[in-house]
Image 1 (spheres, rainbow, N blue to C red):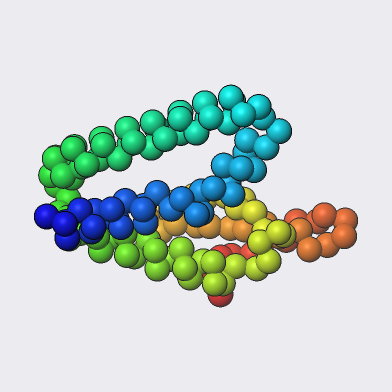
Image 2 (cartoon, rainbow, N blue to C red; image 1 turned 90 degrees about the vertical axis):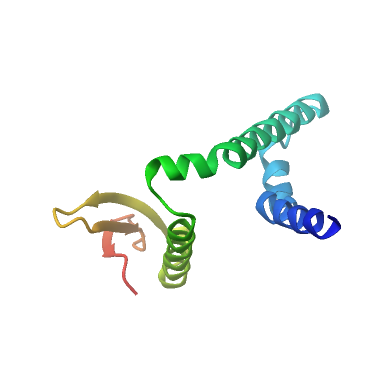
Length: 131
């Protein structure tokens, strides 16, 4: 029983990521009154709890209704993480790049273009998102 609780607690803390969320929360509520900051913390915690509980209770039935197995869902998540890692590794300097357009080609493949503003006069340079 203790092992299950420990495993669930570690999983919960990895999902919520308090050390990663604290600076974001501090920057978003900077300049607010302490009462406003407390209200925002309570509201965001309740929303996160509601989303977690929704998927904890209805996640498996939802996947079954959509005809997706848990193994397929895990594989798709791994593929998404892989593509995110490749994109972050191959992207130019983040301060000069913004996502410009996402569209679908007739064959079903996705087009992602990034706009870089490397010129002093802010001229736009299109670059396909390949390494």
